[in-house]
Amino acid sequence: MTIIGLIVKAMNKESTKQYMDTLRERYLKAGKKEKGLILDEYCRNLEQERKYAIKKFNYKVKLKETKKRGKNITTDRSERLWPSCGRFLTILAAKEWKRS
Image (cartoon, rainbow, N blue to C red; front, side, top):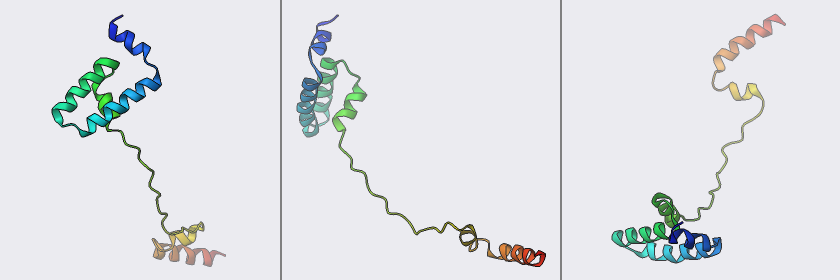
């Protein structure tokens, strides 16, 4: 096991989160070259993939947007279908009316 592996095992979740938070502050303020150096440091110290680290640094809490509901749809089938195929239904209704 390498020395870095021992450091990673010695860090618990809380200390890893604190380390991530301090680096995130630097990362968000940094330019392109500095961001690369911060990513290299993070990946080297915690032995994590670079793409994963980028996602963690750029992570923001997203609030769910409430969706507005559309018009109320009636549950009666004939009322829902009538406007879309009115002529066809009038023909069928007339035939059914004659049968009964």
